[in-house]
Length: 251
Ligand SMILES: NC(=O)c1ccc[n+]([C@@H]2O[C@H](COP(=O)([O-])OP(=O)(O)OC[C@H]3O[C@@H](n4cnc5c(N)ncnc54)[C@H](OP(=O)(O)O)[C@@H]3O)[C@@H](O)[C@H]2O)c1
Image (tube, rainbow, N blue to C red; front, side, top):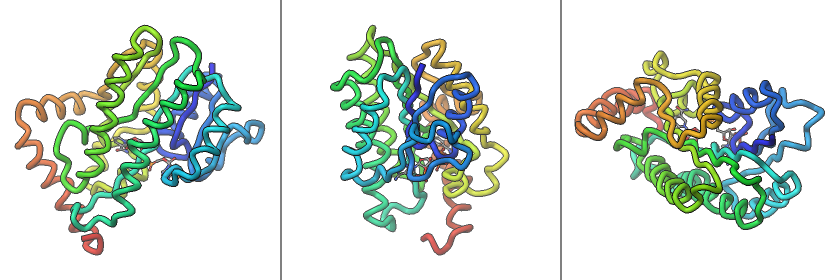
């Protein structure tokens, strides 16, 4: 069994790598940096490149071709920059769409076209609650994740029977991305990346199509559907305002 994970140097991607290595599964990863504790014996199984630059994609695709076939591909790489959207730098906007949406879509197409996955393989998409609710300060991030949601759903329908597609919608997870984009007061509610990784591995093994990790995530989605304005108000007060207070230089 071989797993390919994007955004694998830290956070959720790194926790997934550790979980699969513990299960004795072969892993192949990509990020700009190789994790410090990446096994020396498998150095060639980690590709370092900046995925925000389309010029780097062909080199990465060649690498993937050499490492194929895979049984699971985890589209985990994702970036966010919480800020009022009118103030966001144009490059940051482009990076968010490029990394969160365009790259996984083009890469997925490449994997299928080149037949680099074994039959009945799984695609796992790490999405976000930002898909379900207006997420003040992360409008572009939310838009890119909603695009990814639609793509993954279309893929699940068109590949039904041949491949398995799992969509994961985590709430706040204790990673660098969450620390940079949500205030410290939200710390206590963040899930550990290790716990999330275990839930994802189990959900894939059971061939689930959707994973809402934790009761709070489930409650968030119900609220977003039945009482969206209350959720938007709460997010504004609990995330956006404290973020602006803590980082006045960002405004
Ligand atoms: N943390 C949360 O609360 C949360 C909640 C919901 C969804 N998510 C989603 O979960 C996924 C993982 O997030 P995370 O919290 O683990 O983030 P993270 O800690 O910031 O890790 C992001 C990973 O992506 C890699 N990466 C970033 N920019 C890259 C680039 N230009 N080229 C190649 N690799 C790049 C990073 O490695 P390098 O820096 O070495 O390149 C790192 O391995 C994302 O899709 C995110 O949107 C996170």
